Length: 282
Ligand code: AMP
Ligand code: FE
Ligand code: FE
Ligand code: ZN
Image (cartoon, rainbow, N blue to C red; front, side, top):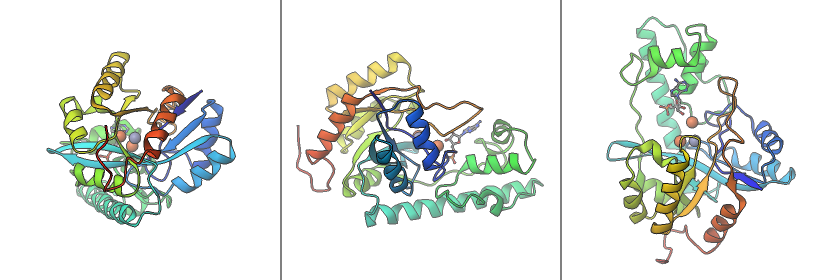
């Protein structure tokens, strides 16, 4: 019995609709899932309803893009209330910033003679959190590039002509928002930050958990993060970070989070970690 607590849908940069996501989860024999779209909780309700109807355990989540010391960090929020006004407001602002960044990228592409229109990037009405993947898809769809890789290599990577830096919220704010919305804050794919000292410093700021199992973590990394979580009193989580079908492959099913970890996460959440004025514990 395994869970996957890191999944994206077409509400951010995944390709699956909520229905397809749940169907794939069932096909892979998962017992529980969380939806963690970038900077939105828009998919939580529909995925939640379909997951429960399919007999799966479900955790409402999000993956907030944040920044610390000039570095981009991704903070997963689990058990957040998707209706929480403060969270919704902050996410709407983050989404506005993302749309503005897409407009800037398209402007730079046009200056390069690539006649792409913003409407072509935004043509998928369900996406709330557009970014480079959406620009890349529009470049391929419009025949400007053959593959997504080519779109990134030619135009979208840092240092390429259509690169636009990302403005995101401070990590302290991300933790505060997740807690205010009743959730637990978990640092996503810590190995990608290439600095493990961040974990202890974030724990000091109120981080609740660490994503130990992730496709970008080898076994040694997973064990290192599990040990780190144990010594810092952090919860452990895992997920495939599946974005749907990419290069005709998908990652769902490649990472198996034990259901016992989900139970421990639920217990921890039920014990009252999360609210802004939570008492110091442990
Ligand atoms: P953004 O957050 O808008 O800067 O875009 C980052 C996203 O682009 C990440 O989720 C990556 O998975 C995706 N990405 C980066 N490089 C590539 C690539 N070569 N092909 C496809 N997707 C990529
Ligand atoms: Fe993504
Ligand atoms: Fe991420
Ligand atoms: Zn993710």
